[in-house]
Length: 128
Image (cartoon, rainbow, N blue to C red; front, side, top):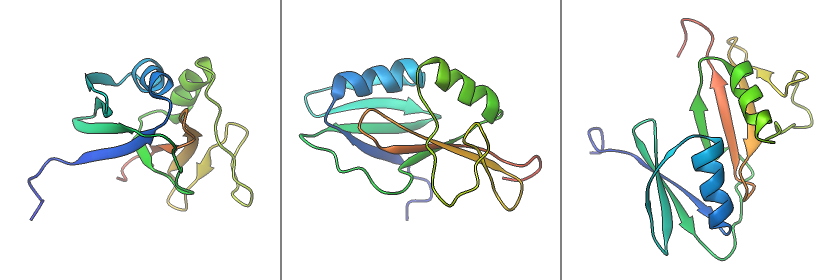
């Protein structure tokens, strides 16, 4: 039914100024709309609507993720904006916070200003 329909992703923020700065300046997404109700960005052709709410209850799991071509460079760019990788007890991550998947991919996590858990993934060459 939705195979040809465009996907819209949703998150929430109780700190819209900080969220706008984070997603626009730190992550480099294009702001396409801001209203009293939400911020809207374009992320790789997908609309990301960040709803303005009184309180955010972050998911205990990844809310959004991006595929990147070079996880080391991406982590370095995030670090230059003061964004630190998230670490998880019981998950073997290297000194940069990267976990190597069983198929050889690499994943790292970080949080936005509302503590939503976000990820970046570099797939093993030849995999997707």
